[in-house]
Amino acid sequence: MSTGHQTLKLGVLGSGSGSNMQAILDAIGNGTLDAEIVLVLSDNPEAYILKRAEMAGIATEVIDCDGYVTRFPDDSQVAVGQMLRDAGVDLVCLAGFMRIVKAPLLEMFPERLLNIHPSLLPAYPGLRAWGQAVSDGANESGCTVHYVDAGMDTGPIILQSSVPVLAGDSAETLHARIQLEEHQLYPAAIRKVWAKLQSES
Ligand code: GRF
Image (cartoon, rainbow, N blue to C red; front, side):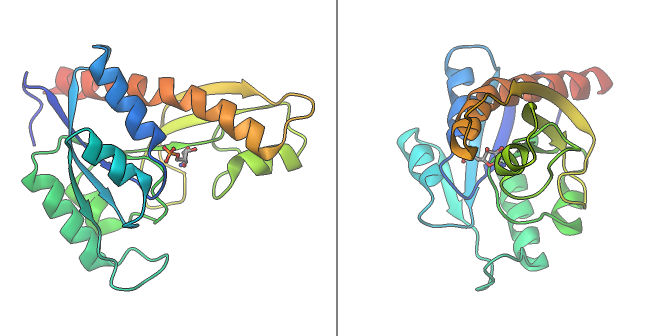
């Protein structure tokens, strides 16, 4: 782990489509983020995030969670942390990763684990945050990039962006607009965190 002048190395963990991982890749491609994604990990062998990574020539691994459907066992977290360390990862980005990260991995990457959540935290933590906003009759939602701590969507906020809830929005239409915003926010948050780490080194 280093904060020298070499290119920032990112590891990404995701369970689904990987559109945020793609947005990070696109930001790297268009020169707005000076970084490299060196490893993409998923607990779901069928996840499209793995296909996207393979198409981009990025190393991938499937996380073995010992048959647990939702738990992220300690041994699996240590194995993931070791793979990320072996790949020289500086920052770990959770992007649609559906398991709760706890002490083993947090302790291996202190203040270097980020997550993106589809609401203006602390509003609507947890699953289907966009659906929670619509059912609640909120007139605003958005997205948040935050540091990961041991809680669910509770870590210190890095950047947020608001998205209006429009008359007639369904959970799905709101989520689609939030995702467009997420794709701008995540690269910006990574730039902010990396600049802070470098200024401290
Ligand atoms: C995003 O909406 C993110 O906020 C949430 O899960 C979704 C992941 O989408 N944590 P994708 O896999 O990046 O397309």
